[in-house]
Amino acid sequence: MTSPGVDARDRLLDSVIASVERRGLGARSLRDLAADSGTSHRMLLHHFGTRAGLLVAIVAEVETRQGALLNDLPEDPAEAVEAVWARVSDPGLYPFERLFFECYARGAQGEPPFDALVPGLVDGWLDQVAQLTGGRRTDHARLGLAVIRGLLLDLVATGDREATDRALAAFTALHPNRDRTPGAAHWVAGAGTG
Image (cartoon, rainbow, N blue to C red; front, side):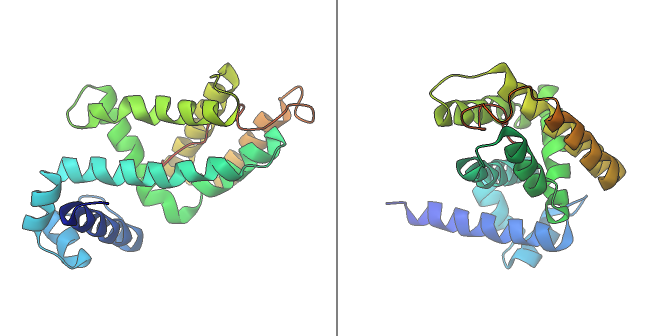
């Protein structure tokens, strides 16, 4: 059972995520996000501390939601990679993908509170894939994660869907045993928000 404060925070986070889906994020202020989410900036500060704390919460929640797609991957590794790509490269997710990469870069520089996100953005996905494939992390999972995230960064930066789709197809064609590999999840780690 969750406490009322946790429920209120979760509902508020859902409202902010819906606002970002509708209008993007960019440099929107807490006041603007709050008004569009049906609350006050003080409530956002109460639940998330700072704008940076809110951004971290958004990325963490969207990552959790994206992680659920690993449970329903096709068995064929190439089809699994394509399924993850189709989901994470959906134009409706672009505001979150841009935020993901912003927070990832800031965290990689050691900037709090973003730095707390970085281990989970890699290890969390790799651990989830390992659970689906017998408990072992593989180099293929890390490679799949890196390729999908790299292409996703290319896509949100350039908007060149055709080129990134072709590059993903070239990657999936490289897998030597794609028809004989038991379970696809070991080969694809997903991209996340990101």
